Picture 1 (cartoon, one colour):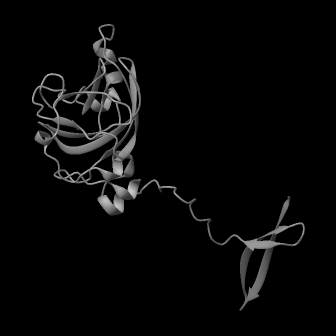
Picture 2 (cartoon, rainbow, N blue to C red):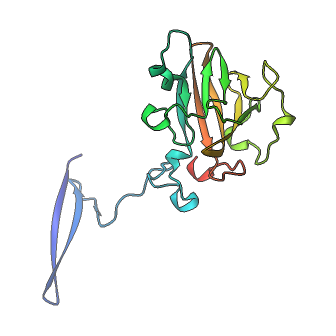
Picture 3 (tube, rainbow, N blue to C red):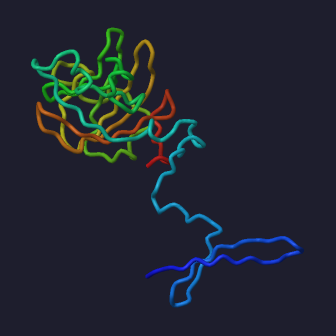
Length: 204
């Protein structure tokens, strides 16, 4: 239905005040002196700053990683690597120092020489239900008896504790799809607290 906008000028003590009124052809009208509120569930672009001091784009997101194979070159390394710290696999940002790598259907977290990171499989658990405290020794190891390589299983949620020369953080992700030895997609969160696994609820 076509709307007609009228501009009313009111004389108040010699001053003019304008009010825009939208009027439908059938006579219904409404004022436009306030912006419409955000849609339900919509997260403002600066969400997270007030609560965590960190924008939500650095605390939650989605990613796709390809599987490392012998045909990939060092220039392709960004395709198999992801940084939860920066929320990207942009090679100019990550500089080969990511938090997660996908290779031959394995999830790898030791990606640099001074890396002491670990990963655990929580099974089919929602991301917002991950525990705040976690000891890797309480969970099964990977194929080689350690906690830095684990099998990728669709719908499973994993926790990554990144510890290396320049990063200390907690993150968790849920695998939403797995094409073995080809690619994975995941939804992830990063804790705003470097020492405990805190779910960034204000960003979900």
